[in-house]
Amino acid sequence: MTDDAIFDRLSRSPFRSRFRLSAKDRAYARDKGRAVINAHAEDFIRKRLAPALPEKDGRQTPMRGHPVFVAQHATATCCRGCLLKWHGIGTGRALSDGEIAHVVSLIDRWISGEMQKG
Image 1: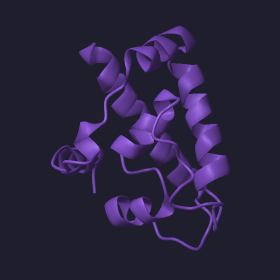
Image 2: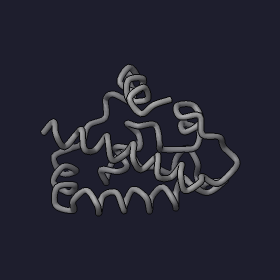
Image 3: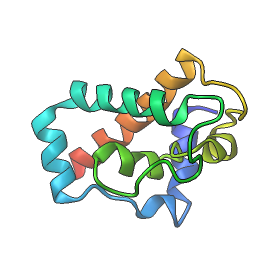
Image 4: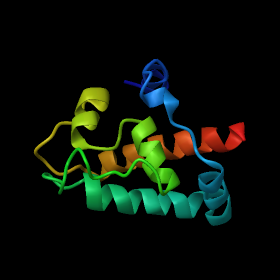
């Protein structure tokens, strides 16, 4: 599935489409810059989502507190169950570097879109 198709599908989900960056999240993202935010995203994904059996899977991503966390919920990249349901990325194995890069690119695209809105 293409990224455009994924974002189209996500936009039709009442739950996923309700997420927005707060003013504080926008300011943080603007202050840190895209490269730093993407580095944070990669770090969070590698530590919280990429392992074959993530600790507290399904509850490892806070709903707020960092722009990446909000983006993960908006893009259904918050837990392995959502990765399977929305992106077809299976469970029970570690994510590949390519899958991690794909998840980070989805998060980056969503945050970039939010930053353009405000």
